[in-house]
Amino acid sequence: MISSAETQTIEALYGQLLEAWNQQDAKSYAALFSDNANMIGFDGSQVDGQVSIEANIGGIFRDHKTARYVWKVREIRFLTREIALLRGVVGMVPPGKTDIMPERNAIQSLVLEKLGNHWEISLFQNTPARFDGRPEVAETLTEELRKLL
Image (cartoon, rainbow, N blue to C red):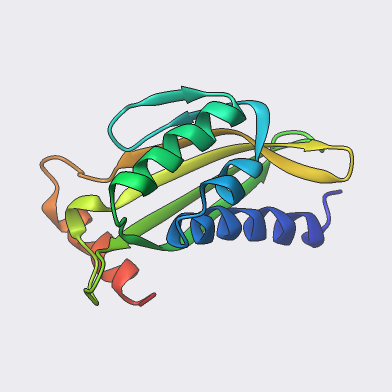
């Protein structure tokens, strides 16, 4: 049986990832990934490997003052004792603003692997939550994320 401490550890790791983004800390962000991890960005960009992830995210931070994340974990499911899936939803608050940008809402999925006594991200996918043709679903998500502000 998987302990609730494992679930809490994985949820905390996800929070660390998004807080590293919010702090524009590419080194801390990338350190949460395995050496051979894969990342799929909001725009479909694919980045492979921890070193490349740090370089990619570092470039974003050098060139932009990024919006900060608000998030909610939807599910943590253990595929095995050493592999877990986390699904979450996020909104982004632009610098100097107090409300999220609904067009930047996203669904995030992480596959995590337990190596020894710690968990690392093996795959991170960030998909726009546009809900084409279903504006009521998009608005429901926006309202849910606004409650996290």
